[in-house]
Length: 353
Image 1: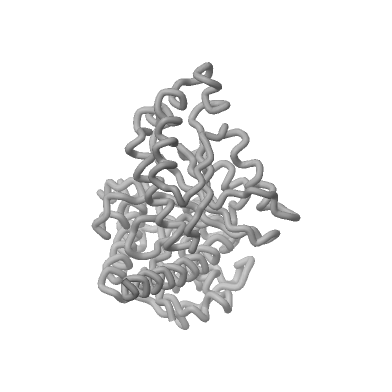
Image 2: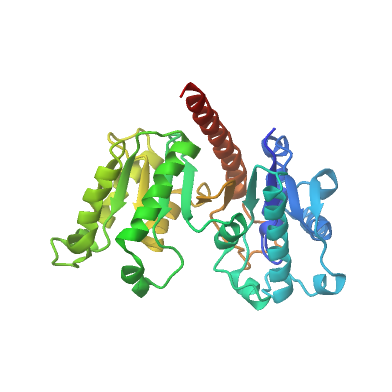
């Protein structure tokens, strides 16, 4: 059985709630994941939310927990919906423990519930997010933020990678370079092969400007370097079909048709490469807000997380939807299984040589 660790996220947010609701699903419970967090926090969540929860919620007493307790005095300062340093320190410690146990071989993958970046910063942890902590602890400097999801209408698998992530919009044209896109495309093609079993992918690559610059009339990045870079990338990856640069306002049309159905349009790409955060995540969340899963690519282990935040505004009310957490857990299993098959294929090929 594939062993997963689930860090329970910010204790002032909906993380512990959606984790316990996910474990109430028989298919998730059968996977027997290990929760990494405070047993006291989980027990308090269950005791206070179980009577008013809109959905079944699992009893922590029946779950496997790697208990990382919080100092009782600090725990009393943590309240639902209130961002504070104690909650940030706790969620960081739980993630760190899950990653350390994974590095030690106890787990094949990590699923992370949402954290508050501001709470982390208040606690003295100056990371942009969980993705960067995972990469640092794994000792990798080439990594990316991809989003995967399966349509409940058609079964089609959505896969989208962001070239740039959490930076101000005015910095995107500066940070976005041919060298950066080389790294991101390398990661995406490797991920499609290793984690999704796609060896000859078709990838849609967005332009940066409206209408992909319209020949330099609406921006020159496409003309100056993006189109030449794409020509070189096609030579580097003869087994991949690279389409682009596609005008950003039309790139997602067939994806929407594939997601909502009833049938799949012809010529669907296997993956999408968006050049900045909102260019990729507005369409992804419009299609698949409760189904899309954030997965960090480039790590030596699988890491997934729900495609939502701490939702402080509804924390403690018992109404948080666990669908994305359930999807994150199932995707972690599926990606790990496909990665294991890839390793077997590589070993078999090496033996034949």
